[in-house]
Amino acid sequence: MSSRDIVLGRIARALGPAPGEPYDAYEAAVDRGYADRHGDLTVEQTVDLLAANLADYRALVHRTEETGLPELLARLLAARGARAVLVPPGLPPGWLAAADAVRVPDLAGSTPAELDRADSVVTGCALAVAETGTIVLDGSPDQGRRRITLVPDHHVCVVRVPGQVVASVPRALRRLDPLRPLTWISGPSATSDIELDRVEGVHGPRTLEVVLVEGADRACAGTITRG
Image (cartoon, rainbow, N blue to C red; front, side, top):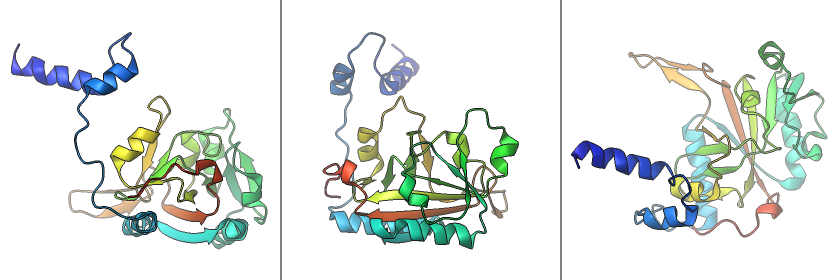
């Protein structure tokens, strides 16, 4: 067997189980001996690290209790002058109870032009990765289709703390379903040319606001571990 065959075989093995192979057998055969986090942070320190790295990526970070979430979301939308906001089908109805903006449902038949007329989008998330300042969406009902978080220029994402916060990417992968349409977001959409001139809003929202909500993760209780 050539070196090329060995490398390609390892890549194929890492991509997933062979046809008909039980997933448990595949997992047992793949070496996972690497460190799955850096340091031994408490839950509170992990959440603080998430907030710091989100801000480092130029996301706007807010913190609130569950009872204060509707008022905060209303303020954020009003500050943007948002008159129409895209809403995933499973977004908790109370989240936007205090907002004046018109709710635009996530419909399969909506055209790009119709989505572009929405000023903002409000979603939940699947989880958030502290070490990388990353929000992960998986298309669940409180997040909607991927496109509704790419077309509007303003995305407000709610993270339930601490239940949806993990320390690292390896720990995130253990909790995510690889068959879901995963979108990994680290800050607002941005790109730069060879002269390092940064331009935001090219591939997605120009502004990302992340709301860390304590007391809203009852459904996730027990899913976070130290660090």
